[in-house]
Amino acid sequence: MALRRWGVPPGTGDASPGDGNSATLDECQTGLDDCTRSETRLQDELNACRASQGNAQEEASLRQELDTCENSRLSLQNQLRSCEASNDSLMTVVAVCPAKDGQSLRQGKGTFKFNCKSKRTGQAHKTTGHGFEMCLQACVKDAQCKATNYWWSKPASQRCEMLTGQVGYTGSTAEEHVVGAMVLTRH
Image (cartoon, rainbow, N blue to C red; front, side, top):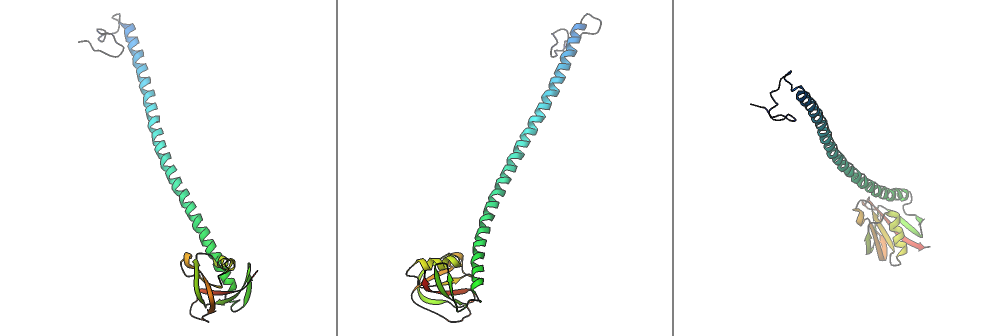
């Protein structure tokens, strides 16, 4: 029975050395060597392709992780700005209270009388999320605003309370987290 092999013509698969088919054997050996080299080359290319696909998947995973980190960084920067703005307001409050309690002080385009730990009374006009200094400036710009209460313990959107009408103040109270300020003059 003749074996059919790659590159071996039918009927020559059972050739043996010295029977006149040595050229065919040499061709077969060369073909086999070429085939082995091709198989090795193709296996190397396949391995490289698989590694490349693995690298592409790893790269995609790393890109996604990098995007997540970038989004976290931006979120943290926004939180930091918010904290710094809140801290600036608190620092301004600290500069006023208790050192300036009961005193008049020019702040931006207005002169205010400050009362620490005591809120101003009057008709509620507006409630905003302004920081301390911006709360005072918003009141100065609004002709109806006569006084403010700044509560640094309230949620950010409710810290600045602007009052209108007749204003007074409660006197010293247990309200530790409030600064009352009455507009004396606008500049």
